[in-house]
Amino acid sequence: MDLPQPNWILMKSPLFLIVLLLLMLISAPAFAYIDPGTGSFLVQGIIAAVIGIGVTGKLYWSKIKAKLTGKAIEEDDDDDE
Image: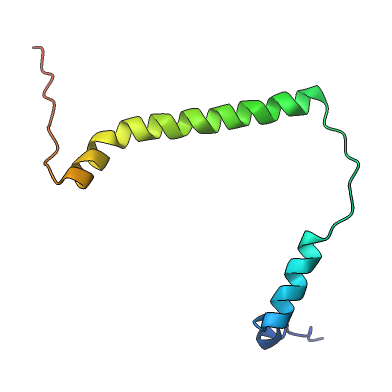
């Protein structure tokens, strides 16, 4: 039994995209409850994302700075032996 294939030409039409966008924007209220545990979980996730972006930026800062200024990256040789 063959399943009907989607009509890709219809999905690329502007009218289809406008109707799809309107259906996504017009939604009924959910009346959902977010308890304090969920709220603190969301706050933790946001804080972790900000700190992760900061650490990643710090790790690659010398490469970013060298790329923007056009200077060579200075190598640190920390041989204490």
